[in-house]
Amino acid sequence: MVCPPTIVNANNKGTTADYMVDKFNYNAASDTYTCPEGNILTTTGSWHKKTRERDSYQFKKYRTPACKTCPVQKLCTAKVDGRREIDRSQYADAVEKNGLHYKANKDLYRKRQEINEHIFGTIKRQWGYNHTNLRGLEKVNGEMALIMTVYNMKRAINILGIEKLLEKLKKWKPKYPAFLKSNKKQLFLRLCDNFRILNYKSVA
Image 1 (cartoon, rainbow, N blue to C red):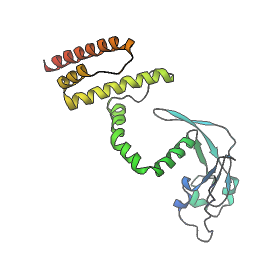
Image 2 (cartoon, rainbow, N blue to C red):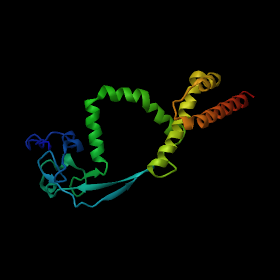
Image 3 (spheres, rainbow, N blue to C red):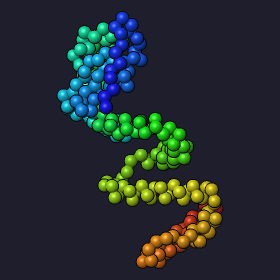
Image 4 (cartoon, one colour):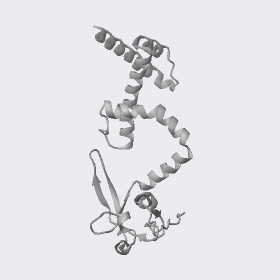
């Protein structure tokens, strides 16, 4: 579905806010943008790379020669050559889809922010874990599982204290397959011992 362009009357040119990026409508079928004045911005299809401090991404550029004679040119762009240029990231579709989900579920997203956002903030900002050390979905999932386990352990210690956590771990009965139960039990008992040793060291 393509949204119709918002035509701004040339006799009433409006403001620069009328020509922000979100006022340009993207047409996925033709891979073009339509500006508020109804002009079509096209791309050569070439991908460009932008590198930031922690990551990089690819994007395409969209332009139209109509900018040169457009009556609202000065409101739309400050470039020396007088041409407006739109960059579209390789992740734009996902960002737009997420934006629609957010608008349709604002209360749910707000609740998610309250519950989850601080977790990732702690892991990324305080612990400095802003990238993975391994590659591949299976390995990265394992690495993230370890990070989350450590976070959960630290939270449990802060809430319960080490002694109560050890007590709960001993009483916990995980529903693992029979052939795993013995190994898992040994693992958790060893984990309990390690926590007890760490606790005694911290007290000392």
